[in-house]
Length: 590
Image (cartoon, rainbow, N blue to C red; front, side):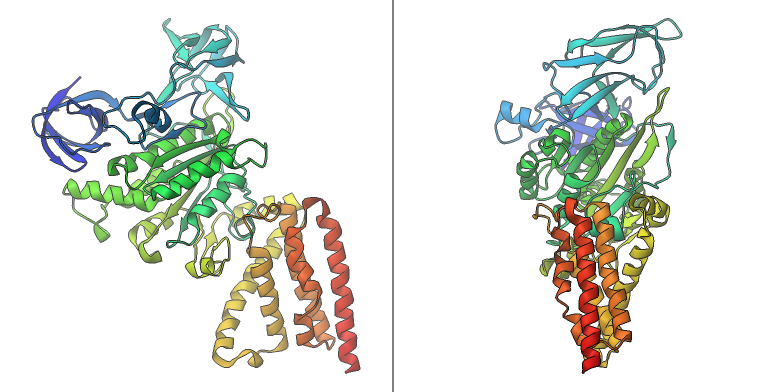
C-alpha cells in the first residue's frame, strides 16, 4: 500500500508527492480525516487526486494513503430501493449515524452487511459453470428477484451450494477451478465503475422501448438498449418527462441519477417515487428503482463519478436478463464538473473551457447502453437504455455538451420552452426532434398493431411539417388566402397537435396510452381528414367541416378506457360519416 504526503490543495484537487507506486484511478484516503479521493493524473512521484468530499482545512504535509484498487461499486442484494450519493455511499445509513448533514470521512459500507437474504439455489453440485451463469435467486423486493451470478473470470465445477439465509459476505457456494483451487462465491460482487461489464454479443436495436407517451412512441421512438438525449431550457419539462418514462417505460429496473441538479428537484423524486404506484405491479415504484443523488451543493468531483456508478449498477441488472432504463439528469452538470477539474489540472481548454476530451468521455458513457446477450453458458437477453437530460445555458443547443451528445445519441427529443408555457406536455418539438431507430423498428410496429402503423405515422409527420409552411403564409397574407384543401389540412394538423401529441400526465387514463389505442387515434384523425377531403370535393363548405360536432368526440377519444376503444372508434366513425353527408347535402341545398 503506497503512502505519500499532501503538497498542494486547490479546491477538490489535491497534489500528493511520494506516490510512485500508485496507479491511475486508484482510490486513496486523504489526510487524517481519511477523505475519499481518486488519482486522475500522475507525474513522476506526484499524483493529482480528485477528492470526493469537502477539502477545506486540509494542508501540506498531511498523509495520503492509496488503497491500490480502482473506484468500484458493490453489487448484490440491497441495491433496490436504496438512495446513494455519487460514490455509492448510502445516504439513509449516513443520516442515521451523523444526522442530516454529511460528515467528512464517514465510512459506511454501500450494502448492509448485517441483513440476511433468503438464497434459493437453481444450480446443483457437479454443474459446470462460467462467469455470468446464474446459480440461484434472492427475492429482493416483492417485484424484483436478484439473480445471483458467478463473477466474471471464474470457471469450474460447483463443489458445494446451499440454500438458506445468508448475509452478503457469507459463502453460498464453492467452485473448483481447473487448477484445483477453490473459489468461494458470495452474494456480493465488486466491479470498477470506469470499466464496462463484458457481454457475449450486442444485438440490433430493432425492438422499441414502449413508453405510453404518444409523441415518443409514434413519432420519435427509442429502442430497447437505445440512447436518447432530452435537451431543453429551464422549465421546459425535462424532469417531468423523465419521471413519466421512469414510471411507464417497459423497464424492469429504473436507475435514476440526479447529477448536479438542484436539491429541490431531487427532493421531489425522493418524495414522489415511494408514493407512486407501479402501474404494472401495484407496488411502490421504489421497489424497482435505485436512486443516486449528487445535487449541485454536493462535492463537484463526486458528480463526475456518479454517472459511472449509476451505469455500472444498471449493467449488473442488465446481465441478469432485465430491461433497465437509466435516467441521467443532467449530463450538462456532469460536464461542468469535468470542466472544473480540468481547469484545476491546468489542462489546455477546448471550446467554452470544456476539456478537449469531453466528446470522447460522453461517448464512452453512452456506448455502455445496448441490448445484449450476457455472458454465461446460456446467455440471457438484457437491455440497458440510457436517457440523458441536457441543460444548455439559455436553451442554446449549439453549445459543446449538446453537440457532443448529439454526435453519439440516436434519439433527440428537443424540448421547447414556448410549448411548455402553452401547457403542451410533453413539450417535445415535433419539427426539430428525430429518432434514427424508426426504420429499424417499422416492421415491429406494423406487426404489433396488425396494421399500417408506419404509413399513418409518415402521413402525420408530413402533415405537421406542411402545417408549419402554411402557418408562414397565414402570418404574411391571412387565412383567407389559403385554398379550402389547405385550410382543411391546417384543421387536421391542429387535431394532431391538440388531440394526439398533447398528453395529460395527471389524468388516470391519458397518462399512458397503449400502442393499439395510439394506432386507432391516428386512424381517427387521418380518417377525419380523408373523409372531409372527399366531402369538400363533393361541394361541402370548409367552414362547416371545421366545426363538425364529431370533432369534440375525436378530441376526447384519448380519455376512453382501453376496454371501450374499438366500440367508441366505430361510433365516432359512424357519426363522422353522417355529419359529413349532412354537410354535403346542406351545401347542395344552398
